[in-house]
Length: 443
Ligand SMILES: *[C@@H]1O[C@H](CO)[C@@H](O)[C@H](O)[C@H]1NC(C)=O
Ligand SMILES: *[C@@H]1O[C@H](CO)[C@@H](O)[C@H](O)[C@H]1NC(C)=O
Image (cartoon, rainbow, N blue to C red; front, side, top):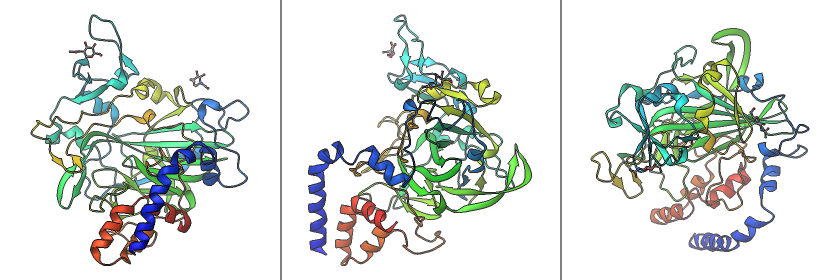
């Protein structure tokens, strides 16, 4: 076993040396695409390179029915406290501030106040870029004001009347279409580490999933989790048979909808129930997310829809025209800044602060991507994003299959004895390159 570990170390160091070379030539985007998209299919095109010949959709603002028919259903956690929220209601409780804390827009902020930049509040007359701003809460968010808690789905339909999801459809050319479903929660309650926590809380929480279609058929599903995410072939994803709705009225049509699971507090998305180690390399699995079959949310019953072409977002219906699309160009933080270390609410543990920065909005999530992942993981030197052919099962008491099937690294590690050596091995390769390579071959 020692030799094995030494070998892995050597392999890793060697790879580190040749990374610059790999980055340059053969293993670039095109490699990623062939790997993702299979043979005999034309390439996915970034939005700014689409021409009239390669366009998949007839015009800006057009949302195909198949996108709605394959909208993921989201199982929230059974004991969730922070439910989906309405961005228009959320922003009312905030000021917009520059990083130096000066206010560019007083509360209550309306969603139509959000924009790419703001008129400077001072004599200078210089405008302030939204990137340099954040939404700062008027209330003390640590006291759980009502607006922070969001809204539960209706038990029978999954409709959340007071919290629209946000759908952004991006034409990727040659018959490819990406449907990004954004899920907004007012608060992210971070993870616990061995019973202590939470760590990594933030105000405002944007999560999303991507369903990628080829000629109207869903092919892949990617879902966000802590800056990384899970990528699956659409066929591998669990489905739920459900009546199709017209507006909020059920019709007689039956459809199969993909299922995703939103983790307790963090709202990271997974394809199965149970305990999931954070998708961060070299972290101990003590930092975990939990999913189960709690309240079912059907975002297709209430959403704001846009198309995006790499430069402009176009509202799909009257409903979005009213609130406009400017708010999408707001690139500041959708929540308070990391609390100062002197603030009594702030705490620190060796890996994380208790309260961190709020996240940036939908257009900061690489919707131009040709690969399926929002961004490659830092240890993933070839930038690939292979789609899994089988679901990665959660572990622990909540897992419906209490096994390690699909968690290849887990199985390998369990063979290592004594225990301390296993701990070392886990530190070296847990969720690192080795896992990815094994995943790739065992699917
Ligand atoms: C804060 O930054 C803004 C924009 O850069 C600037 O207009 C303003 O004068 C600054 N305020 C203070 C108090 O420094
Ligand atoms: C993107 O959409 C906007 C709004 O519909 C349009 O004005 C613009 O020309 C489009 N840009 C490209 C590159 O297609």
